[in-house]
Length: 290
Image 1 (cartoon, helix red, strand yellow):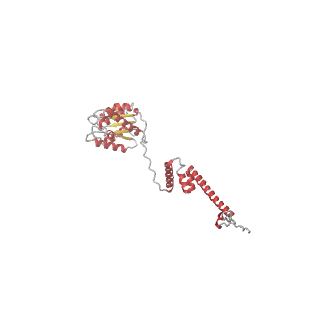
Image 2 (cartoon, rainbow, N blue to C red):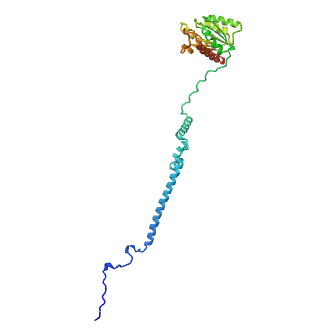
Image 3 (cartoon, rainbow, N blue to C red):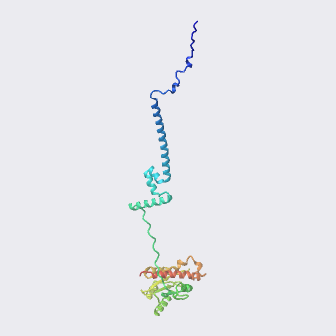
């Protein structure tokens, strides 16, 4: 009896139809798509890398030169940066330059505040030798004589206690007659009485037009003090080209500790102050253009 060949029956779902999984089998044209995708990915990465390096380079460039960084960002900022300096001088230098520039523009437009006027020049002075000075005075000048001799070596002094202005005129006339009246005459009278306008006129007549005159006013607690000082100040003001007032009143009024207890005559230290005051007045009168 013939044997029948038995066929093996294999379940359908266990027999692989293909040795390659379906999802891994490349379809028609799939190679080119994958290449394009790869190129696009590579290009994106390259672009990102380039941007990174460019940004790093720009930051490094900016950190190395703030002025150029401003120029890259904004031209107007670069101009301001140049006006403020190169970064090494600080804000104060930039501010001063800016102020100077602004001031120059205002000056050109005529809108700037006028410059302050120069302070008046101090009075001119001239060197004076004591040998060119004759001084006539009362007891105040007597007390200051040692200091005057030291400050003005060679000065000729004729001073006496109790002398009034009228008596002083006679002394001046006598000195003139003896040839002892020098180019500059100092008159320190008024402590012991009033001074009249007539007496002042006589004084100018005695000294003549070619001499310079210094009038020393008075400091005393007496009824004629103000009258004497006003008359002497008026005489000096009336002859500005040849007469100078030596203001003993203002010199000593706040330094009365330099006076003796009588409040009139200077102590030795007060005499030094008197001599300095008189020397300055002599230097001023010698410098007068008249």
